[in-house]
Image (cartoon, rainbow, N blue to C red; front, top):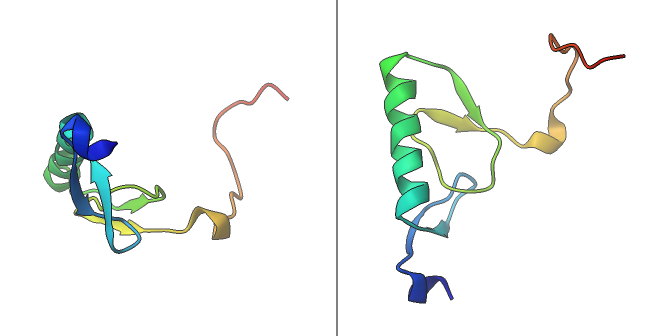
Length: 73
């Protein structure tokens, strides 16, 4: 299906390759530009494309110890 929609393969965050399209790819490139411009430390928790300047992190092993957002409790 993806081949018919003008999609192409890129490196995956978890290794190997995934299918993407121009819209997702431009978004990835823009994130890479911002990460580099602001010298950010970023963890990629997604299972999609590798984003240069980030480290992959498995979300299943994360523990949130605090949340600065008021959750209305």
